[in-house]
Image 1 (cartoon, helix red, strand yellow):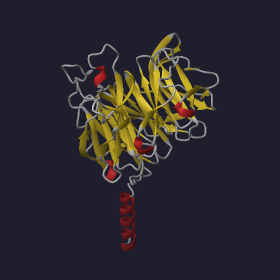
Image 2: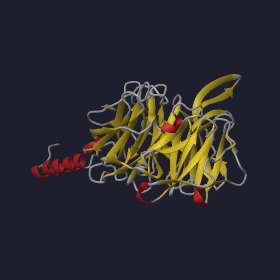
Image 3: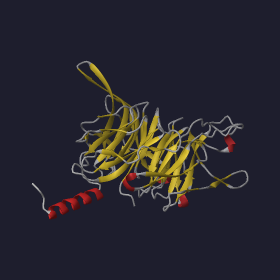
Image 4: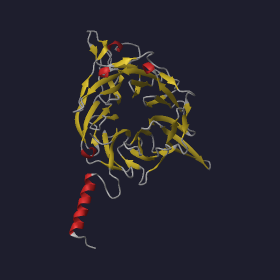
Amino acid sequence: MKLSLMGRVAMAMLASLALGLGMSACGGGTIGYMWVLGDQFNQITGFKIDDFTGNLTQIIGSPFTSNGVNPVSIVVKPGGRYVYVINQGTGGSRPTAISSGKETSGGIAVYSVGGDGVLTFQQSYATQGNVPVWAQFDGSGGFLYVLDKYSPDPKYIGSSAADPGSITAFSVDGSTGRLTLLTNSAVLDKNGNPTTFFNVGVAPIMMHTAGSCLYTLDSSDSSVFPYAISGGGQLSITTPGTIPTLANNVTSINGNGINIYLTDAGANRILPYTVGSACNLSTVTGGAVSNLIGTSNPMYSLIDNSNKYLYVLNQSTVSTTGGTTTPFSSISAFVISPQLTPIPGSPYIVGANPVCMVEDPSGQYMYISNRNDGTVTGELFNPTTGELSTLSRGSTFTASGLGNCLAVSGAVN
């Protein structure tokens, strides 16, 4: 059957509209973008997220270079216009009297986000300490904090005392995404000038902001180091300072403005806290919560955007059927009530060695980066029950070798 002239014009108009909206006959349009780090090849794999299916399609020009070596952390400035990648670099160590210990090819790479989620490199910035490991925005998105494993504090050079880590703080230009170093007005150097770093505990591995509080997680003694965020992005040490935990081998920290959760791989459990005055942490009634039966090595956690559910990534899980034991990685799912209650059906199978997890901007899907094979696992998210299930068109997407963390953004504005 041939279409009339008017019919052909109408079809052309509809096709143009669909292309303009990023739609196709088998999808519902792009609802957001995702960027996944791969430290084997120092790459950032970009994806468009399909609204109707949750399917991931690689962005034009992807993968992008991380403009450094060993990308380990990625954050998106609220509004989605700028992406910040932390390259850990190589060869970094504790500063000594004869060596700065500064890593090679490390630092912060800044990207602008263009049409269809294309990343364009802007410039790189150095942190004040050595071996950057994590990045975090404050709640307003106006200040970026970068965590270093080793502090540049000269008073520890040549000392037998354990060298603390440190935070480098930046203000962020909302129009250009550029970073400006903040000084620590509370601590002066030997010449009476403000220092350019904020010391934390020993061997920090991760940090998280909750309201006006910033917490770093220290692997040396499984403690938490709290700072209060005040005007101008300044960090102030709070009382009582370092917060001890009962963790055997703490691996991650996450939370919201009310709750903080630590994962303890040593005892296979989750440690829940509430945020108190002066950024103190109080143990939730009932204390530590055991992880699900058969799971082990919890390495990361995520609270969904509604603050109703907690998800824990387990790098080791086993199931036994008919005398045969099958190893796999998994996701433990809990209802926050405020005590944690397991969600029926979990743990859910995920790719090998999961390291990071995000929720899509529309609250329909969850995505997990898997280190061993550089893939991303997609899950359909039920906001009523918290249950996860496989996507309708397949749930495994190829990213880049040795996957690391990932980040998402919705509409860019």
